Structure formats: C-alpha cells, structure tokens
Image (cartoon, one colour):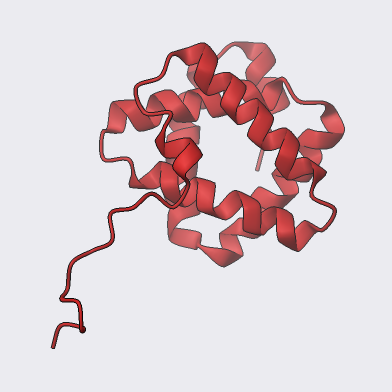
Length: 131
C-alpha cells in the first residue's frame, strides 16, 4: 500500500547549496567547497561535523549525471587541499565517522575519489588522507 501521498519519491535537494552548483564553473565549485569545509571545520563538536558533512555527500551521490558528479567531486578534492592542515584533519575525521552513518553513500563517494585522485596534481594528492 502506498502512503497517504502515494509512492512518489521526494526529489527536493538534501543540500540546496550543493544542488545549485550543478553546471557552475570550476572556480565557483572549488570556492563553494572550500567555504563549506571551513564552516564544517569550525563546528565545535565532532558529531555535529559528521552531521554537517553527511548530507553533502548524500546530495553529491544523488547527482545522476556521472560527469557532473565527477566534476564536483574533483572540485571538492581541490578545495580540501586548500584548507589549513588543522581544518583538513577535522574534515577527514568527520568523513571517516560518516562511514558509520551512511556507509553506502560514503563507499560510492570513495570509489569516485579513488578514481579521480590519481588524475590530480601531486600537491592535491598529498593533502588528501590515505586510508
């Protein structure tokens, strides 16, 4: 039995800011991710940082166009490398914990990261935590 409102899937974005990046230029996407990471790193609680990061990863994996998802993930990797080392540590720790919240989303994202990271400049690769 379908619910009161039928079985229609909710297509609204989980993260409107990220959803608005679709089709943007690379500089805009990198700046978005850098600012988003800075805000997430500034959250004073590790559990809340995971809570801030997880919807972003969910929204990213919901993008149907694989090339667009790759482009936005690449921008995310570049933005991550531009962060201060202490910010990168906080984001990396939140990302590791996010696997306990939504393993499927995080594994899907990690596959894309593993594909894209070797194609990036060594300075970007060196900033990314090795798992």
